[in-house]
View 1 (spheres, protein in one colour):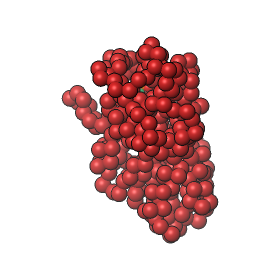
View 2 (tube, helix red, strand yellow; view 1 turned 180 degrees about the vertical axis):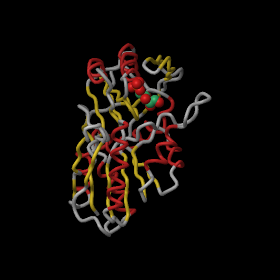
View 3 (spheres, helix red, strand yellow; view 1 turned 120 degrees about the horizontal axis):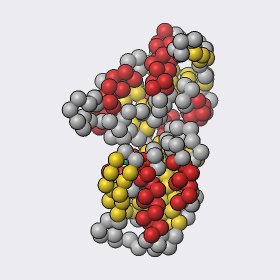
View 4 (tube, protein in one colour; view 1 turned 60 degrees about the vertical axis):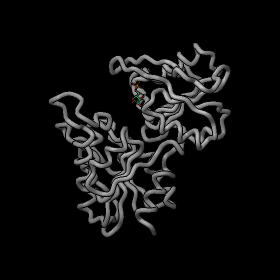
Length: 291
Ligand code: R5P
């Protein structure tokens, strides 16, 4: 099995190839034409082999690169193409909120699967989006990777910044054998949220080390407000952990200013990238392509 790392996911792709027992790993040659269009070329002998392409689609350019890589690998005669999209862009628009809008997640699934035989992603905004794929598609979780890291830290409690994250924080709580709770979140606009403690909080939080667990940190608004709220209620130490760390603009600095530690997985490159999802992705690949 060959592993190819797109420019958005080179480091993670290399980690996946190591997890697969040092399977052949390659970085495609890329350049821009004078008009800005992307050129890619994959190396190595791929004919008749299973090939894994790893490329997060954080930007529109990343998506174009992925589509070109899929076509290049198909042209090179690959037997089966496993497309790994660690961070799947556009996943948050997973339904039509207003008339005239697209279901962006569905549109992207259709394009990503074009030359793929199987698709693997990590913590989709909504797992239901997997049903948009017409080919076998699997979702790894960032929770075990973060749990492997938190096991070595003195964590008292886990918290989700909103009710939508209850399954996530519950899973982490099970892995670490710690209590959990979820805050109430009201979104004002894309950058502002209002948070409050749940009406019935059954665990004492004063003086405790609470880790906030989220799937995505984007503008940082949610985590900053959650940390401020917990501080106001006497929490001793606060950490923030997420699968996908976008950290837009000064989000990382703003979060660092109100927390003690920030953790993210390596689905996207960022300053908090401390846990790797490579073992979890490799596990799915080994299951789907044994031997
Ligand atoms: C919301 O549903 C997500 O789980 C995150 O809480 C949200 O996307 C974080 O966004 P931001 O960092 O911009 O507050």
